[in-house]
Length: 416
Image (cartoon, rainbow, N blue to C red; front, side, top):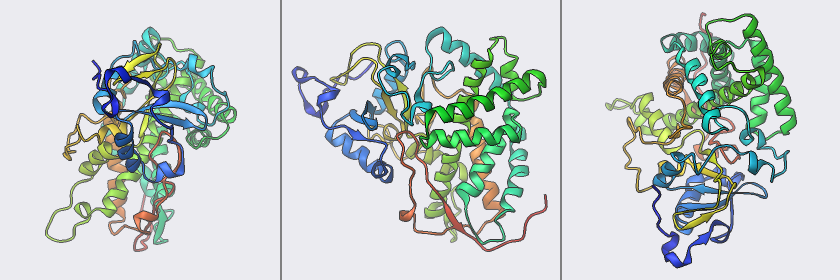
C-alpha cells in the first residue's frame, strides 16, 4: 500500500528513525504561517515524504507531505488509528492546542465500532439538511451584516462579514439559538487560537449541553434534533462531543475557505478582468483554493499503534502523524495545475475519517453564496493593502488570515 522509497536517495541499509533524519521544523510559528509553501518546498528537498516537525514547542510529530503516502495512511485506520488516548498521556494536558486534538467520544477521535456508531449518527443528522434553502438563509443573514459597514467605504470583511455570517448560518442549520451561539463562538475562537484548554472546554461544554437539553425538550427540524433523536441513543456527554466536532468543522474551515478565496479573487486578474475577458467564477476560485491552500492545511492526525516503516523511515508508536493536505495537494507528482472538479484533493481528507458526504456540498455552497452575496452588494470591492502586507494567523493546523481589509464606494444600507 505504501511506497517504500528511501528518503534522500538513501539505501535500504540506511533506513532511519524519523527522530534522526534532521532537525524538527516548528509548524506553529509566525514564520511558517507567513510562507508555508516555501517551507513545504524546502521540506521536500531536505527530507522527502516524511518530515520531523514540532506541532507545538516540545511536542514532536511527523508531517506527511507526499500525496500517495498520505492516501495510504488515511485508508489504513488499523495501523494508523485516530484515537490519541495513549499519546495524550505522554504530553502536558494544558498545551493550548489540546482542545483541537484530544480524545473525544466523537467521529473524528475514535476508531472501530465506536467510530462507526458516531459517524453513522452524524451522517444521518447531516443528511436532513435542506441545501435548497441555504441560499435564502445566507441572503437573509448577509444583508443586516453588510448594513453595519456599507456606509463606511472600508471594512475588515473577515471579521465584520465572513465570520459572523458563517457562524449565523451554521447556528441556524444546527438549530442553535443566538444566546447559546455566542458562548460557542467565544469558545471556538479561543480553541483555534490556543487559549487555556480548561477554560475553552468549560465554556464550550456547558453551552453545548444547554443546546442538547433544549433540543431534547423542544425538538425541531435541525441537525441537533436529528442527533438527539438518532437510534444510536447518544448520551448528553456524547452529544456535547458530536457538537464540538460539528462547530469545529462547520465554522473555522468555511471561514478560512471564504477569506482565502476572496483574497484570490481580489488579487488575481483571472477573477478581476475588466477587459473583454469574462472573469472566472467563484466556484472556480473555490476549487483552486481547496487544492492549493485548503483551510485546514495540516490535520487528519493519526497515531500508529506500533513502530512502522513508511517510505524507508521508522515512525514511533503513538506519536502524531499529521497529514499536510496543503503540501500533498501541491505535491509535484500530483498537482497538474488543473483545479476544476479536482476530486483528488485532500481538503476534505479521504478514507474512513473523511469529511461526511453531506457536509461537503454544504461547505462549498455556503462559501460560494457568502462570497457572491458580498460581491453582488459591493461589486467594486478592492483589497485595501498590498497582499504581501496581510498577516497569516500562526498555528499548526489552519491556513487563516488575521484580517482581510477592503475598500469600496460607500453605499446606503439595503432594505431587509
